[in-house]
Image 1: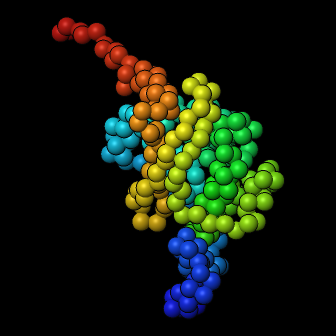
Image 2 (image 1 turned 45 degrees about the vertical axis):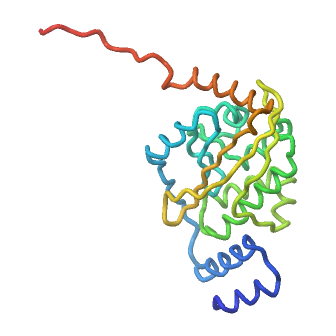
Image 3 (image 1 turned 180 degrees about the vertical axis):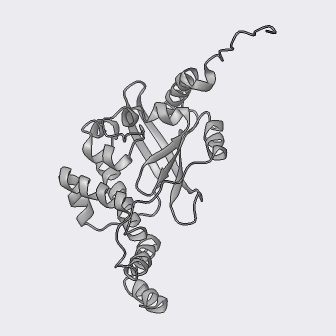
Length: 240
C-alpha cells in the first residue's frame, strides 16, 4: 500500500499523530512479514549520556528503551524508583522493566497512585514498539509473559491503544518520603538509527511539598552514590 493511500486512510479515520505513525509502522513491517524473530543486541549507553544524567542532581532522569527497560539512570532515579529497582521483576543485569513491574509486581498498585493510567499508557507504548519492531524476539517474549500472567495487561493489549511518547503528571506513594506529585517529560534520545530510546525526567513544582521530598531523596541519593564515597588510595611504596 502506497504512502498516499495510507495518508488518505489516516485522514479518513481522523487518526491522531501517534495512531498515524502506528499505521505507517504496521504497513512497513508487513512488507517484511516473512522475517523470523531475532534477538536485538542492546545498544550500550555511551559515557556522555551517563554524564548528562549524573549532572541532573535535583531531577530524576533515566533512559528507557522501546521495551520499557530502564537502561541507565542517575542516583535520584534509583532512589525515586527504588520499589521498581528492588522488585523481583528486574532482569539478570539488575535492570527494571517498567511494564513487567507495573503488571507483575503487586506493590506497583501502591507505588503508582494512578495505577490504571500507568498501565494503559505502558501497554500502549509496548503496542507502538511492536509495530516498529515486529521481529524483536525479546519484545515478543515480554508481551507473551505479560499476557500469560496479567489479566489487566491482556485487557489493555486487546484495546490496541498506541502511544509514542508519554508526558504529564505522575503521582507516586514513595515508601520513604510519602506522596509525590511530579511532572515528567519524555525526550527522544538518538542512541541508534533504529532502536528507540527516551530520556525521561521527573521533577517537582518549585515551592511545593513534593519538591521538598524530592530534594530529601536527592540528598540521600548523593550520600549513597559511589561518586560520593571516599576514594581509597593504595599505600605508596618506596623504591625497591
